[in-house]
Image (cartoon, rainbow, N blue to C red; front, top):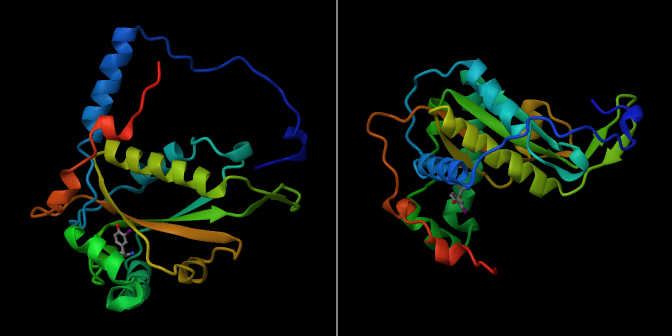
Length: 230
Ligand code: IYR
């Protein structure tokens, strides 16, 4: 991907310029908010399959994210193989049992009560796809020499957010899942040691009787999340 002949500054005209009036901008941003407020983290999946091409298009969208020095320090592994998903479920549930049996501490477990999570993770079997996100501490030129990556958690977080947005935009639901520790995923998925698994995202369609926690509908009002100085 990175070659040593791409390490000098070479400005080009801004491609794909979007010209909108103020009214169009407002209409677009409000329509986007309207769409995004319908995104929910869903734990109850149906087994309806999702075409690989849809997952690929969503990951391609995630790959357009901005990143430190444009190093794109992420790698996604998409799994639909039922046996592989099951192995991930068993390993994740083992970690989660320790977490919910007290490893998390009282305050954390109390915080999770309204969300209704526990150590049972059937969605890791049922959801047609699991996408595991890896953050890369360093990258490699095509000649094999290493370079350091910068703002790795931030960059990977932005790409992951864009992936969740793309999945929602494609009519899918997702659940971010973070068993702790997650290092078992490196070995299971054959990823190198310098990559840190950050998240498992279960992807699919919601079950007919899917539920979400009522508290998840309570979002902070704009006045609480935005301060304007003009
Ligand atoms: N990793 C656990 C616990 C968990 C933690 C947070 I913070 C959540 O918002 C939800 C769950 C799990 O996935 O169950």
